[in-house]
Length: 367
Image 1 (spheres, rainbow, N blue to C red):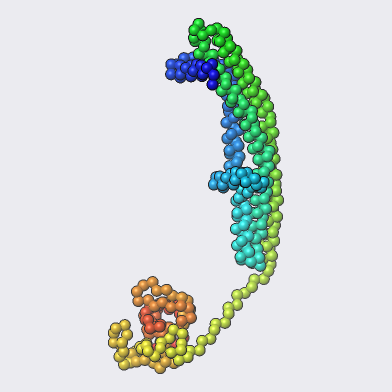
Image 2 (tube, one colour):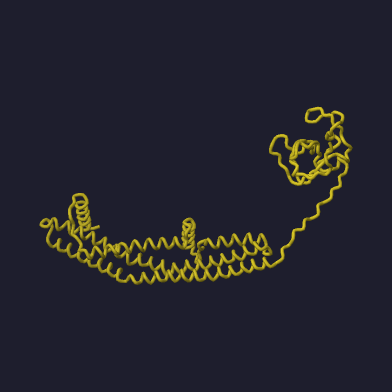
């Protein structure tokens, strides 16, 4: 930077300190200029905020927006023409519906309806992608161009005007110490910058019909999207109504239970879950004593073919101490009925209690 440039920077800094700290007054701009400056500033803020909020409207998920921005940057670096698109919520929902609809099967009412709805959601996602492209081309990009060119140019002129005002005010206060010619030149440059800034702001505000046209493009894109969405959803609605009507007219199939398998009970040592010869048979009342749960019982064992037993209908997992666990299909030897809800029995050498409603009695207890 030249000596003259350094001096000018010093003058401006000194004047700014005088105004901020010392309370010195600078040259006042006329009210018309201030009004133009205020409107241009509001326009600038409006353009920036509207661009941001429109992007959020089109792509609500901030994490997906950030990821998409990164992928687009990487695509440009790699020279890739096509970059990945924003994951539309309709598309994600559609993929979910189609997946589970196909898992259920098209032949089922719900499965077929899920596939229809899922394909419709994917079509909606495609229409939403088209909306994104239209709004970006016809609304966001023109506004961004306005900001990058016209508004930045105004900001540059206003910044230059403020610098020249500070330079002029500094020299004006030191008139006599600074040659009159320099003061005159500073004043001329100040007026020149003021005029350039004023013209650029005026042109921006007078051509604001262009921004109205861009808003109109946004609304047209939205209308087109919603018209297509309504048409697509109407088609889906008709399909679902047809499915409902068809299902209501179709005779209902009656449930036919499968016949229960017949179990032949062989000798105890061959039965599923029964006792083996090495394990003492379960006791019955009025018999010779034998050991059970560490106590002497006076029950006499029955012949194996008449041994009370039951078949497990469901799996039973013991939750408390003393309960007997088993699996569906197990044959459990009955030793006692505790009350109207619980049996006592033996299975694979283990004894304990279990609920009546989990088993089907094969050979009942006798008292």
